[in-house]
Length: 151
Image 1 (cartoon, one colour):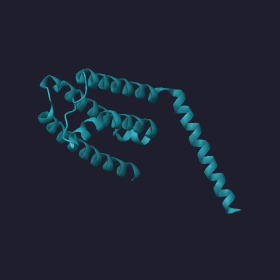
Image 2 (cartoon, helix red, strand yellow; image 1 turned 135 degrees about the vertical axis):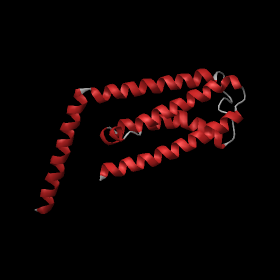
Image 3 (cartoon, helix red, strand yellow; image 1 turned 90 degrees about the horizontal axis):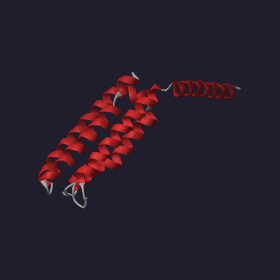
């Protein structure tokens, strides 16, 4: 039941995010100052899609919520804010940037590196064992607290 609710909510979030991203993309096509900077817009959209479709995977959200949402919030204040807020204010994303293509390519490469690091993090056995032991410890604490309350 819990996992079904998460899956349904993630589908809704993905739909809303994708709708906003497509709308902002088409708006930015008309607002962009120099059409040589269209690559920056493409890098920005690809970076957003990459992060959100990786992070809004139910397996990542259920099993690795803190690290997954760290990636989401990192992307939120670097990439999403650029395209969404600039579109909201009807300003081009390449405004006030010296080399917007390089800037957004760099952000795309950083997001790819963060996803690769997150995949390695999920595979490391040390963290899995630590997670199991902490889970057992917290279950023990909860059971102990319940026993104390009964007495």
